[in-house]
Amino acid sequence: MKTTYVTLQQAENLHKLKIDCTELITEGNAKAYDKKGNDVNFTTKQFHCWKPTLDYACKWLREYFDIHVTSHPTYNAYGAIYMCTVFYIKDNHIHNDLLKDEPLTIDYTPPQIFDTYEFAQSAGFDYAIKLIAENKINKFSEREKEERLKRVDKLKKEEKKRLDKALANIKDSKIFKKIKPKK
Image (cartoon, rainbow, N blue to C red; front, side, top):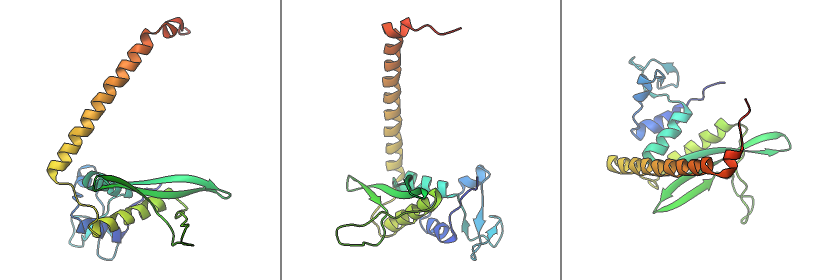
């Protein structure tokens, strides 16, 4: 399996957004581009911008902007094909934008089709960067990020309690007690 990295243009866009890529160093995945798009060591003078994987770049979109890029498969006569949806919150409304081709007619615009999961994900990343560049989506402040993480942790704890209670109820049920494991 081949790792997919962002393109030079995508890396420059991340750099313009001031996304902190230094965590790549601690994880041993530090790669970088020079101005021509060649791979260079991040400690050299030729360093221009970080070169994260596409998955990391999409993770940062989730963490810093609450934008979710989702590639999903479907099938046609030739096999698997992929589409991409970008989910984001604006003005307290959830938006889910399915990437589309140019309209064929006024009433019908077909979804954009990609040959691979990675091509779909990359196109979704580009679309998300476009939304940010057009100031349609703002970066979280540190306070907003902390509040969001607290809400997520609270929801996880509530869900765990609910599942633990359901599991205990199942174990206490008469049906469960009648089933004896085979030895």
